Image 1: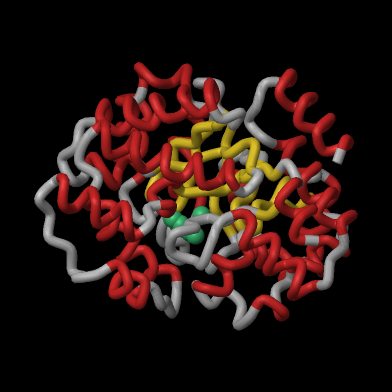
Image 2: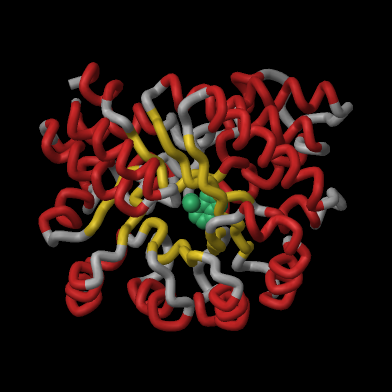
Length: 330
Ligand code: ADE
Ligand code: ZN
């Protein structure tokens, strides 16, 4: 099974590039930029990654990314993850990035975008890895700030596939961003949003109705509403489920209690992603191994999950056909 999961042409639809910052690279960048970290060793940083909820994680996530200061840092961050993911048999990544988290620290958007886009281009040319770009808005910041960032990103619109919504979910309902998503729709962007991770099933419904998203990031709490589950099935809305993330943030107590098998049994279009692999115990392969062990899934389940992800990935139709062919050939 391990060999099969390594060979599987995995597609990751839910990855925060800032959450792929491994402590080793964090130390390297801190040194390069003359920044003092609150940890004295890599091990000390890893030991601090014990979270009781989403907010506890977000505090360290924003602190960690403070070492990113210029274009080269963003390039190194992304290439480091792309190479690691490719080594795990990943062939496509739809990558969230959080511009507001960097603008707030006084970095120009150009530093962020040029570093990430240079890494994307190099990965696509040299690694046989395609990359989708999801510009995410921080939902605990004001909606007019998000709208401003969307407009400010005009020079990069052509290179961005979708807008997303992340950060602290509770008390920041999707409807707060209805104008931002309306504008994104006018501009022709695909739309995704985190919903139903810590927030209730009503946030999933609101994201579908008010933001007109085609994907729900996480979405595991949909099971609390039968009518919603039926709708998600009928419309085949993809759920980007992140098993190890849900365990780390106490969305579930342990993986064996995770609703993934039930989500599949309901006929939902489920996929598996790592979310923030540097913080939650590993990347795509670790998430696949953990599911194989916890749920006893055979190859057919993983093939279906991968097919779902390939069908929904932000790729050219040519690339999609190629990836489906690779899956069928395995
Ligand atoms: N930002 C990075 N990871 C996140 C998650 N799992 N939920 C919400 N916001 C995030
Ligand atoms: Zn996420």
